[in-house]
Amino acid sequence: MRDLGWRLEAAGFDLMVAIIRLLPVDLVSAFGGGLFRLIGPLTSAHKTARRSLLLAFPGLGESELAALLSAQWDNFGRYIAEFPVIDRLTPKSGRVEVIGAERLAAIKASQRPAVFISGHFANLEVQAAVILEAGIDCDITYRAMNNPYVDERVRCSRARYGVRLFAPKGGEGARELLTCMKRGQSVAMMNDQRYDGGVAAPFFGHQVFTNPAAVRLALRFGTFVQPMSIQRLKGARFRCVVHEPIVLTDTGDRAADMQTGVAAINAFMEARIRERPGEWWWLHRRWPASAYAAG
Image (cartoon, rainbow, N blue to C red; front, side):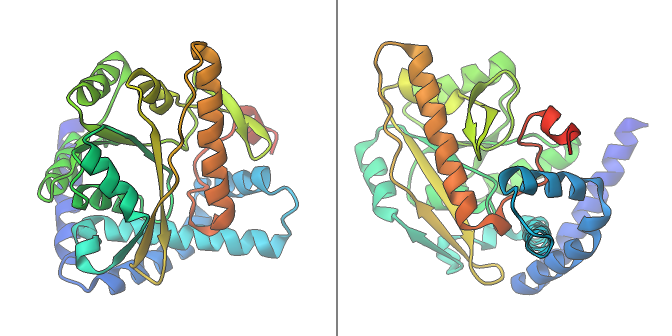
């Protein structure tokens, strides 16, 4: 019965994708934003998003809070609607401008693998297209869908324009990341979600656990962490910013170096969120569970 349910979901997914791909991109994006501004506040995730915003910005007034929640749902809804047409949201399409492209060119020319990081900003899928169009050999980590049939469709759709996705899990995923780097390939990952058992570092005045994989890989291979961010301009148009690399210090004290590196990543994420708070996914439980229970 579970397999039947998955297949029905996949059929529904196929129908949705077929319809969306017949429509203009900006219309699809606007519809998704409008829909989620309506239904988002009716979900349990709305309470999480509200609490997350107050943890980050405890002095927010009700009107400011409402505006940011609405902006967050608009952006998230646009992302969901844009997902089936992500192959049309690339620098080649004219819908993505790239700031700091010279840094990507330098990485390609050096043939030295880098560890790319970003967060759940605007439409996070755009980052992969930017990296690949720069000619960088890079594997993109992602969270696998619960439905294996839908997951297969997502992987195949990305593969059509060169994106290699893999979902690291436990030791096997760590080995795959290592294999990529040993082959001279770069890797890219999201680094802004809670990671129980990770390294604790400051984030909006709170200690939060963060996945140290990016720092661990960069230190092991003597390379750097390359942060990127995506900004939504108007509708389904974007700006990708390739920021100054985070150069790690290898003092020989691995625990201390990991702590310093993770703190630098958290500081980067916080700075980007503060710049454009309506474009980050506040519905993630980024802070410890106790912080949400207290709300």
